[in-house]
Amino acid sequence: MSSPLKVFITGASSGIGLALATEYVQRGAILGLVARRGDALAAFQQSHPHSSISIYSVDVRDAEALAEAAAQFIAQHGLPDVVIANAGISRGAVTGESDLRTFREVMDINYFGMVATFEPFAAAMVAARRGTLVGIASVAGVRGLPGSGAYSASKSAALKYLEALRVEMRPHDVGVVTIAPGYIRTPMTEHNPYTMPFLMDADRFAVKVAQAIERRTAFAVFPWQMGIVAKLLHVLPRWLYDRAFERAPRKPRGTVTE
Image (cartoon, rainbow, N blue to C red; front, top):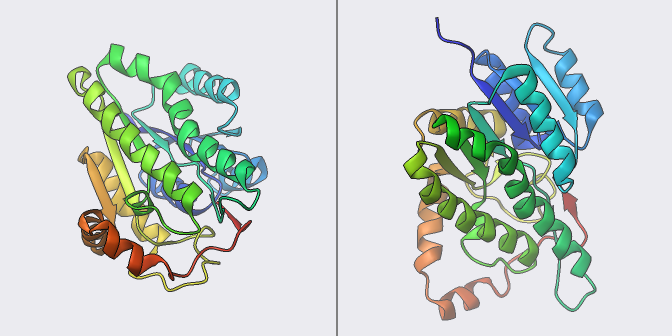
């Protein structure tokens, strides 16, 4: 009988992270869950009393605390098979409107938080020649969305970082999986003041992600229709993109979703 999968997930208290935690609990995995809201993690842990779940109330911007959580998980359960860097926020921000702090915060969580999540595990995975690092990026990183410059920039950085990491880890048999969600029904999207095409429920999304991780898919977009949209946006000429999106609906400034 094979041993249970060991999975470490950040941003696990709500949205995509919570859906992934639920999916892996159903698969019988040993979980390490990280989020700022320790009460939400504790509630999840208590609702699954027969599962092996370790929780860590940590902000991914605190690299030292995140490394300590990683060390505790390894000491208790061993090196995880899968590490999912999912923690993220979305905030409307506009240059020239005193939103510099917002730009920094979004980048710190969405990009540097991803790097900090992988850092405590990468060397051990390389030494063991096993394991999979998973980054939750976004279709929003393909082009710069007006009103969401902070979010788009952070997810674009994540996409490029994950691509570089995938190539770096390839000789060591460590997988790197990039997941680029389109619109997923979560607290992050429920207040968006515009139409969200191909909106997918979080639990269905989590099933698709777990399958992609199991296959070690290098890059996956869910729902699949948004993959086509992303490819079209990527090749759209700048002049046409500018005209098409200059009047597009925007996330209001200061709106906080995670």
